[in-house]
Amino acid sequence: MSAFHAMPGPYRLTFADWLAFPDENKLYEILHGEVVVSPPPSIRHQMITWNLERFFDGQVVRAGLGVVLHAPVGVKLTDEDVLEPDIVLVLSEHRGRIGEQAILGAPDLVVEILSRGTAGRDLGPKRVIYAAAGVPEYWIVDPESTSVEVLVLEGGGYTRVALLRKTDVLRSPLLPGFEVPLRDVFPD
Image (cartoon, rainbow, N blue to C red; front, side):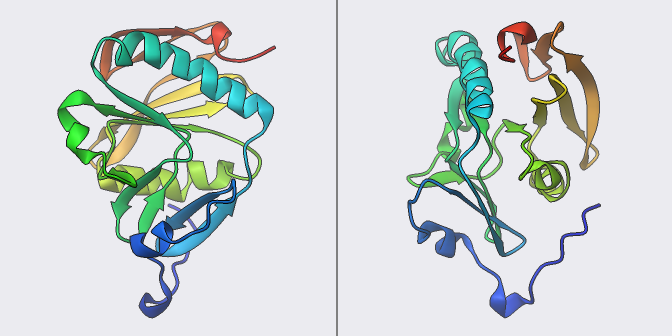
């Protein structure tokens, strides 16, 4: 579990507060009612995001299987949990979850790319929040170790189904036939 301690009820921020945050090239998330601000991601982080998105576009979006969005995109999981994952997939049958300003409810797949400033949240409280909200699949991409951990929701928590390295091929339990050679994801 996480060591994240929420503020008392009257001081907690909500989705309405998130909607009012300024647009200043930063990521604003609300975790258990508390705001967390992150600076823009590194160039390496952005390259990994772009490389993954190319595979999503070619194998998921063009096939009409779903919508793929990237940060900054809000995901309202509860009124006091509004996260901004690096990449989000909403399958076509759940397209109604995509609202005007945010995804309202659990996406089908969330990808978080670790950075020095966000790794603790991505591996701790955000993982717990995603599981509690029912996000079926969660990928944790580690640029330092050039690895991807694929997690699936089972019994209210995540179970690792794969820990892949740069020489492996990423496959998704959610997307039969989806394949990503990780050598094409991690820049040299």
